Length: 125
Image (cartoon, rainbow, N blue to C red; front, side, top):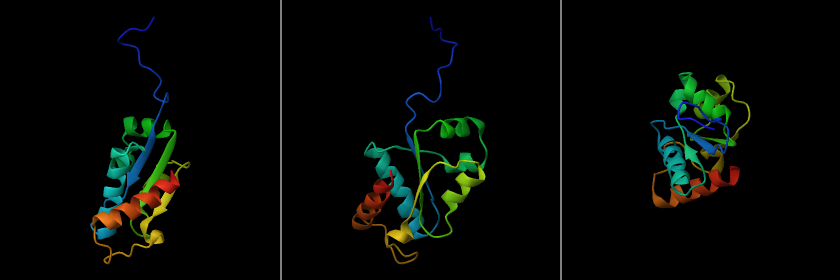
């Protein structure tokens, strides 16, 4: 019999977690908006990359229990990917928007580019 003080396993039914670069460049904003759109579409749940970088225990527990992880970076600096790796997260999919045809400083954040970025990211999930 379960009581209100017992905690369930954090791994049961863990969703796909989505981490995005949210850098200052247009491709950083595009990565961020892509993660938010994937969350709205039900493809996964955008999660806190800063919490991973800050080694916040509760966040790391949830990340390690995730069924899938997707890192979305805007440019080849790959801040999202590097943050996950430095936290010891080794199992994840990655998309760099530059590899999907978006050039830093030349990729306005508009509906057309967001649609293309979402398609590129969804293909990695």
